[in-house]
Length: 533
Image (spheres, rainbow, N blue to C red):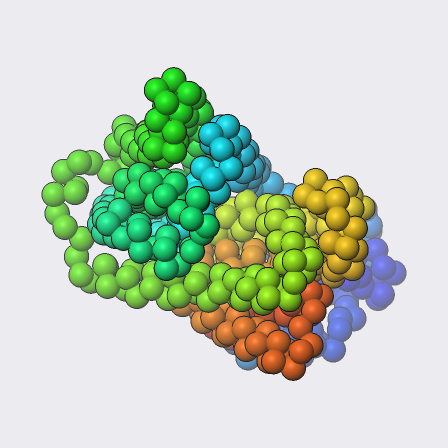
């Protein structure tokens, strides 16, 4: 942001809450603060020594440079949330750290749809019924992973803060606790999926008779991968906390390669059909999980002997409570989308198809900021672990700027090429017309969605997961009620459905903004300290 200048010095001395031998005109809010109040004593003294008035020195260029160095002072006030004055380009020093986490995470996210498309292409060679069955069963697996993503979300801030402090015991304890829960939950979940596959497919998915046996067959096979799947979620969060997303990218590439090779071998070579495709998925997930776990052992972050001691209830119960809240959050959030899918399906074929295509486009567009959300969580937690709140805020502000810029560019590209993208899914003119009507509204919200997601990452970093959960549960619940009300009033169009979804998800952004920027209890507020004389 631009630095305020002193009119008393002819506009040549940059000053922000900095003592000067001549009066400096500041905004009314700033003039209320006694000189130096709210600044750490050490920094206040340093600023006093380094900042010189233009008239006293006689060298305007040098004084402008010296005072600019002091212009990035951050002030806090116990009664006003917090205010900040940010030196121009203050976030640039964090760019390398942000990129080191965001780029591998983005590549990993982009790898998933590519691998899924290859899977679908191979299974599609078996027949349409097989492809539909695998797709339905795969959807069930995706929902389960979505619900249990808290295993990684809760691991990242704890590991990042402990690693930043050099607390190897806390890192090892967190790894043992989270992996133990992932294995236990995965084993129970896998058994339930395996033995309950028939009931899940028949009573929940309700596919056509020709699709039913293939969905059951595939679900029973991939149930074997449930422990590995949850362990991978957990390990991804742990490696983010260790600031090492290159390893998870490598594991994802290796997993996709193993999956592709075994798909070809089992499906075409051995002729195992849908079972072969499921086994390829199982082996690829276990290969990735073993790779990342062995690397933890090799780097000394954890030892096998650490697993001999079961997790203590003191650490496990709070983790379980937070995880349960996040699981409910995921279910309610997904329920809002599911409600829209169901109601648009009842509205007609055109509305249903347009809603699904729009959903696919929105899911694709949010990759523009999800990696930045993960970077915010990992890096803010790192600096908070060092008790360096100023750097944590610097990361947050920088990522917000990058996220808004990137998502705005992506939104513009989607708007320009939305018709061409929609053409990849359908050539029906009625569906295309519906999509073109809602596209501007969908992508208008993208930069706002980015801000909300990044602030969620900042709150996760400061162990505010219960607050994040409550915010989305509240806004999504209101959204579901609003959608049902509009349906009953016969006023629920495709545009109204997406407007409700977007506004509901944006509601969490308002909660996040309040907690981070307004609340007196903001985890990113620097506590005021008395100045030294």
